[in-house]
Each structure stands twice: as structure tokens, then as C-alpha cells.
Length: 313
Ligand SMILES: [Zn+2]
Image (cartoon, rainbow, N blue to C red; front, top):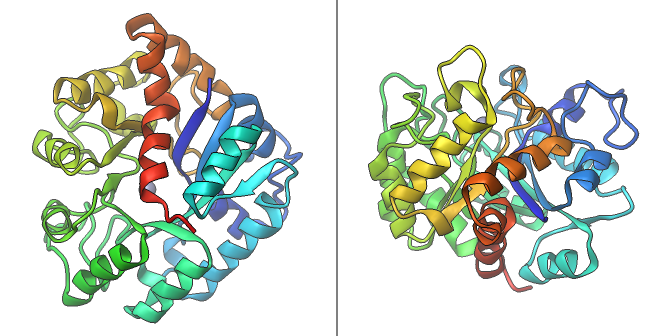
């Protein structure tokens, strides 16, 4: 079975520690590696550019992350850089692993739309305005004042849509979420968030937010961050399935994808600690859902959506 995962933070680890290797890595230091993506049957992995708070706000680490992506990820034999719908089709046809760049927080662009346009030319195809805190564009989900978009944030949303950059609402404050949802003309995604009705965390989506994403024909990437899955001490794959079940109940069956957050977490769902273990998720899904439905969650919904949303050339 094919796999699409729309969020991982391995580029951040490769940015911080130059001794790490994406290919031939010693086990335990990275979750996402070339070998594990191959083992998982991955057709598309999105690589987020996330800049640690200590370096945040500068452009240079953003550019360095793009360099790591080229030097370490795209240099692997069967990795294909996905910038267009055609690239994605090529991956599926040739059995290659697609790699797509996204931006998790736009702090480093310093409010300049010219830098956003340059990021598009560097291959960025999805962008979340914030991480957890506030920046020049918007307030994040953990910012206590709960503000929405700034004037520049609104311009950023419009420019993303002009450029064919997908808007990712996963880390936004609730108010900013609704402002993006109203302002955007196109579908938006939540690349790595779960259902708040199942696990009450500010990073998860309320039912109204999930319904809005569905109404806008967007996608929700269920995430493996254990504290977004359950409050229990030990979190298991069946706990994640409760989120999928809930989103299905709200009418989202064809809007579910995966957004693992591998390499962005230091605790895991039991038995789901790296892409090589995605087979366990697939097996658990097959106990409750048909083969077709399982395939839609694992890759089909995301592939159908991205074929329509990625630029054609
Ligand atoms: Zn994140």
C-alpha cells in the first residue's frame, strides 16, 4: 500500500546537527530516513522547514534548511522533488519517493512578500503562518491572547493563493483559523492536527473547524503526537483511530490524510515510532475499514487533492 505523510520535522534535526545522515543513518537518531521511507512504501513525504526558537526570525536558517533538503534528501537515488502535479504523477508511476517542501511558521520571511515569492521558487508548496506563538503574520494556537491575522498576515494569505502555495492552518489560533478560512478562496489544509472532541488540546481542531475544512474541500492530516491523541500514559494506535472515526462521523472520510510529525516529537504512539512502522497503522485500519477506505486514509485522499492543488508546471 502507498503512503503519503504531509508533515515531518527531519529537516530541523539535519539543520541543527551536521553529523546526521538522512541515508545510512544509525538507528535511533532520526525517525524519518531514506531507508524507512522506502520500507513504508511512501509516495510522498512533506518535509517541513521548522526553525528552532533559538534561531527563529532570521532568513538564513530557512535557506540552510533548503540546502539540507537538497544535499541530504534529494541526493538519495529514488527521491523525486515534487513541485508540480506532474512530478507527483511521475512518482506514483515510477514507484519513487516524492519529497515536498513546506514552511512551518513564516517568522524568517520578516513580513516581506518578495521573500515568500522567492520561497515559492525554491519549491515551497505549503505554508503555515505560525508555529505555536505569535509572529508578524498571526497568533499561534498557544498564544494566550488568541489574536487573529495582522494586515501583513492577510496579505500573506492572498499572496499564497496567487502563488499556488497551500495554506496550512494546523498551528493557528482559533481566531486566525477562522480568518484564514473566510479570507481564502481555495481549500486549506490542517497538516498535523487531531479532533478536539476526542482529545482536548489547543492544537486540535473543534468540530466546527473540522466541518469548515471539509466544506472548503480541504484535508486534515491526523497526527501521531501522543499528547494530541490521548491523555493516557500509554497511547496506542487504536486511540488514533478514534480521531479518524470522529472525523468520518462529521463527514470527512474523503478529507483524511496522515501528518505524522515524526522527528518533531520525543514520545510516540506505541508501535508507531517511525515510517517503517506505518504498516501497523494500516493493519489496524483494515480491521475497521475496507481496503479502499484504508487506502484513502493512507494516501488516496491526499494524492487526489494534491493532483488538483499543486501547480501544473
Ligand atoms: Zn508542528
